[in-house]
View 1 (cartoon, one colour):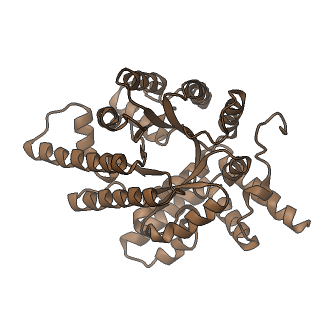
View 2 (view 1 turned 180 degrees about the vertical axis):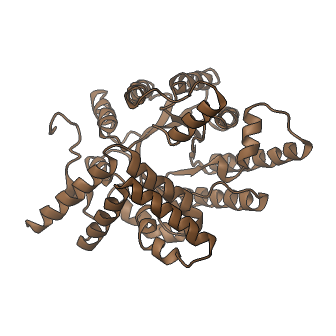
View 3 (view 1 turned 135 degrees about the horizontal axis):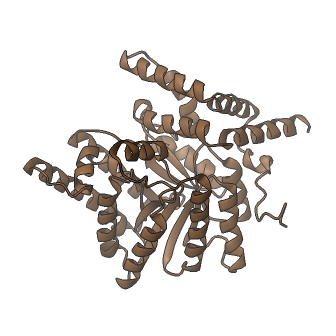
Length: 394
């Protein structure tokens, strides 16, 4: 039965927080309360950076606060309990070794090897149907900028890029050999061209029978709809399966600032309404082309989530259609994830893992995202409060 004309009742806090004890709920409430204050987030971020710079033993504090809410653990094995717990609620896991921003080949190779391990794990465990990586985890950012801009590389840079290429190919090849789809996270627009080039090349090589290579499209970029449709057309012309994930986007402030400083038109939509419009428009396109596209809608937006859930029903598709996935980040929007899973839809949690210091760029983004996205943290707080009151009233 639909509630408030919605396909899914996202207000059901009992289902959303079923796995949390009373003490865990209270801890979550305090954490989101802090993240609801942009000033506190900024102060906390600066303090953490300072603590690391002077080697102050802050790991334990972080591990027992923000880290445990948004991170699965330090290793794949550490995440096994989280994977099992989510599976018991009919939620899949995408293990994400969230290292990024390194500068040395040795570290890039380490990240690449860790991604390969997640593919092995996914092959052996149906509860983790995807692998994922960021190209900035296995390649130097400034090199990607030069390649994307078609600038001439030095001999050393050419050799460096050849090593990057081999890392990317080893990941997709492993996914192909084991039948595990590999999601490639989107990046800043000025390094996205090299990523799209690699995606299109390896899509045509490895997606002949299954969408192994899957790109990500950030719908806050006004060109994303056209790019996605053009890439779909290339897949159709080459007789391969198209795989992708859509997100709203992660680098808005940085994108606008760079465009302003360098004097080129901003690649970002003029406002949130435009982003929402394109995001929901492309959901219709994806559902209408589900026979040739495997896709994941990764969002914390209730309206977009409900739109996809409704379209699946209207098209008389199985709720757990193998080509359609919803996804949210671990530690966020449990009211969306678990209420979808309760109804039988395919839904996954992105579960990042890594050492505390390695995870800090990721955790800073989560804190800033929660403090800047209008209503995000307030909504989380409201639902936690609702569940605490519900339990007290029993």
